[in-house]
Image (cartoon, rainbow, N blue to C red; front, side, top):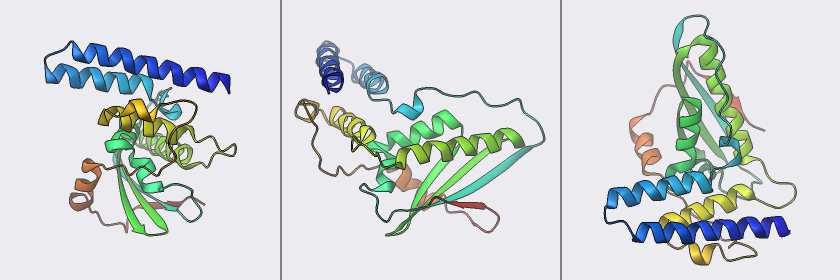
Length: 206
C-alpha cells in the first residue's frame, strides 16, 4: 500500500515539475513535445516497457494479415476503448512496438474484431503478429487482485492530456468512472481500411 502511495506521489510531483516547464515555454510545438515526452515516460503501460528484438529473417517478404475476435461478455471494462487508449495512444504504442498496423472494429455489442497487418520476411511477420496478440492479451487481462493498473495509467494519461490531472491523481485512489477514450485515427481507419476477410487467418480469444 505504501509503495503504491509513494508511486502516486512521485507521479504527482512529476506533473507539478512538468507544469513549471510548460509555463516557461512560449512555443506551442515545444509545449506539445514536452507534454508527449512526459506522458511517454510517466504513463507507459507495462507491456510496452521492453521491446523485444525480431528473429533473424528467413523466407520471402510477404504481406500478412490476421484477424482476432475478442468476446467482451463479462469484461468489467470496454475492451474496444481499452485497446484504443486515451486519444488512441495505446493502439499507437502497439503499432510502434510491433511494426504492425492495427485496426479495431465493434463486430457486435459482445464482440470486438481486430485486424492486424504487416509486411516483412515470413518468419518476422509471424513474430510481429504474435507480439500484437500477446500485447492485446495483456491489455484485456482482468486483474485478479482488483488493482487495475492499466486503467489507472490510462485515466492518468488522459487527465494530463486534458490538463485536469490534479484532481485525477489525488491519493490514495483514482476515480472509478468509466472514461470514454476517443481515437480519431482509429475512427478514420474504420471507414478507409475495410478489407476482405476471406484470405485472412482468424483467432478468437476465449
